[in-house]
Image (cartoon, rainbow, N blue to C red; front, side):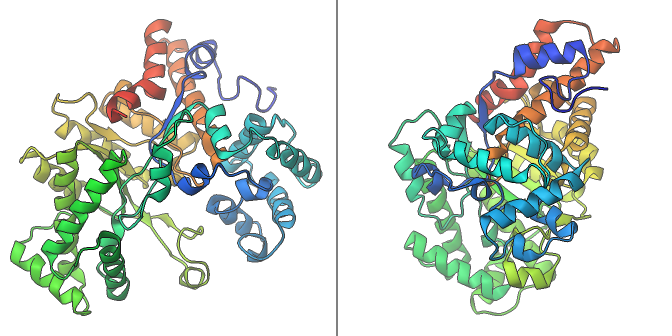
Length: 466
């Protein structure tokens, strides 16, 4: 019987251990998609206790706690930080075989050198030990990024954002670049007419430009893209149920937009045409700027209307949706490609049934101009665990070139989530190591080691051109 969470955790062969310890382990991190706070980095925040850095905002943990019968009072409610931590410790033993169990103990070991198992019996001791270390001067947001060898962090930012903290960070050099990512989803969400118009009003204020016509919206989005670009932004990101690629006429979009700005409802086909027009416009602008566009597809969000009203979005009530993505994705990419306006693109799917769909779609639009121009994004959200990542890499290997993969990202609001890169690297090395040990790949450690380092770091460094 093997011991839990040793240095060879998840590494089941000699080759896997060599690939991880000699090649993957020491590589820096390019975190090209996350939800970290630029304010907390700019202010070099030091967290008051382990609950603040570990549980606040973590809907993964809240979801598990609710499932375990823990009241909302201890998740997002008014319980003390100590009480919230103790309820999480009560839940942890029940998360065995959920990735949270691995992540929890990897983070305790990686950041706090704690190898104890978290449970109600060890909780108070671990709480105090973590808090003692969090009080050390090196345990700030910037200190964590330095410790984890994070070279680049790309946050997720709305077009209305002033980017004031990115401006402050651009004037400093502490070893990590912190760059914005353009996330204009709210400009597409025309179905909720009140929220849509309120958002456009906010966009007017941010840009200082009027938005009464569709061409005004285009001008404002272009202006905001230029502003983001001036502060180092080189990526966009969209979180969509599916890609929108309806046929439309310019006159139709003008009329749909006028109707919306008058406060009248826009639904069905008209809404899809509007979304398609905006998405196509943005895709062309991204290509002009040389950006990478990212599409996170397939989440069914805000399923619990009662909790949405109580807590708002992104609090743990989303799930995998069953949307058709193949045809619209093909049409969208083709519309851009035929006009030579297809930017470098990363596609993430949330439904595992779409793995092979996405993996085969890449080859249709890789044109030799850029190595791995169209990327199959790493296992995302409900799929960023061992099984999901293995399936994603197997699909990519079978249908494309794993060697061109730009690798893992954090996609988290927690500064302790950088252990997920270690998790991914161990899984990658074990996958390749198994093939070598089974005689399915040659024992060419130098070639495989270079491949591992490329996937962990060099491919992303080249692809994003930071």
